[in-house]
View 1 (cartoon, one colour):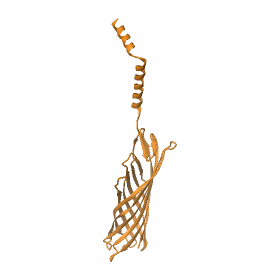
View 2 (cartoon, one colour):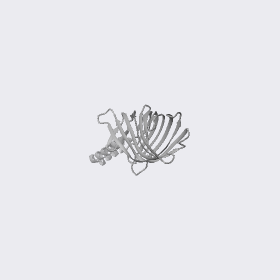
View 3 (tube, one colour):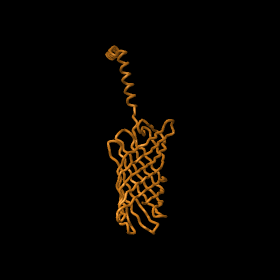
View 4 (cartoon, helix red, strand yellow):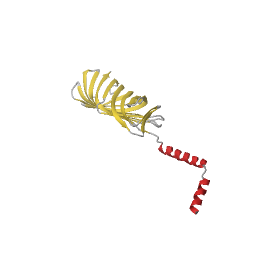
Length: 247
């Protein structure tokens, strides 16, 4: 009898309004628990068959012609495929691609700089060029998925500082083996840009004012955002061609 009386009392205390509120709280709890915010992940582009081009002009002056000013334009281009997992996204500005998705990524990295160039040991079989200056770097990026509208196309860039060194081993009067290490970067309130490249080439000098170069190039470049945008990591390597005009 006591059990029956307790059950009747509980039914009297549980009104239809109380049951409705209880059901609403349960629904809100379930939907809140199932809500997932996709996390922005970096855009990675790694290509072992990339291509590169470099064009340089150098104006020499001084008694030993060891001082100079150089203007250099370099371009690296590559592409790769990456997998974007469930719960992940890539995002640049208002353009967003949510996973799961298979992305085709492309990158073109361009730079233009003006620098002071100092020629070390110009009369020796092994000489080197040290340089430092300023310029501009540009990243042209494309990330594209298979779903309709899954596409991000963006160009990023800004002013940079540049330093580097380039040794040269003279094999013959018109033939040399050249290397060049270039470091570029910018740290500011906006995105941070960095680029490191190494070029190794066989240089042929058909005339005094021109040098043709062919070899292999390695590049690593990054873009780091302070916002929720995806960071960018680019690693490219492959053959390159170059030309230098000497004045």
